[in-house]
Amino acid sequence: MFKRIIKFSGKLLNRMFRKKISIKIGFYGPPNAGKTSIANKICKDWTGEEIGVVSRIPHETRHVQFKEKVEINFKGKTLTFKMVDTPGIATKIDYEDFLHYGVKKSEAKKRAKEATQGIIESIQWLDDMDAVVVVLDASENPYSQVNITIIGNLVARKIPILIVANKIDLRKADIKKIQAAFPEYKVVGISAKEGTNLDGFYAELFELAKRT
Image (cartoon, rainbow, N blue to C red; front, side, top):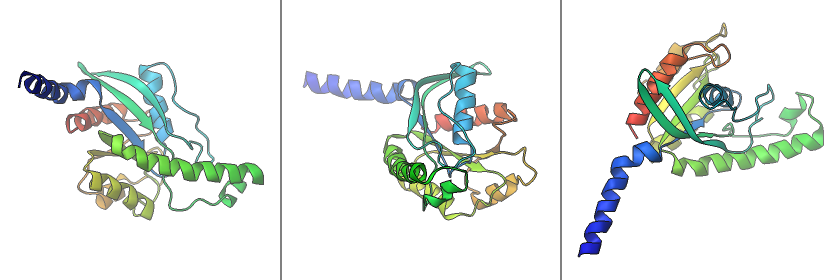
């Protein structure tokens, strides 16, 4: 009986302190939306190191990468979490898409294979996420099969979501379209490239963490 009480108490304590010691936040979205750019900005500002490589070629990030402990201090509050940056989600990957960027055929086929495996890996990691930041390109049409698939997977798993409309520095950027596409979720507009509205993003990140 005593052992059962100890075991129950241990589980209760784990639940009470889980948000402080084991929160995992994943960055998901379509290719080239700016997931790694945002992750790099956060890591550079708060840990002094970047998390991954960024380029104009789609699927530059082809494997899940993470920082084990990222601590953000914002307006007197502290958020510590494991940051998980994932490959861009796509419904189809063709090696020929890489050829347009000057990538050689053999390398293009290798990248396509790795990117496909990276998507599978990203979906598998969803089961380990406490919350997810969905990064979308504010200058692109949000009503895409990829975006709907990503949101659908998160809803099915009941994972708290924050949508980031990145690249608001672009002339074609339209946050209202993203808000209209996903009205049930909070949407915050930023520019990872220009560092625009990062304070607004950090404020919403803290709110997201509260919902885990």
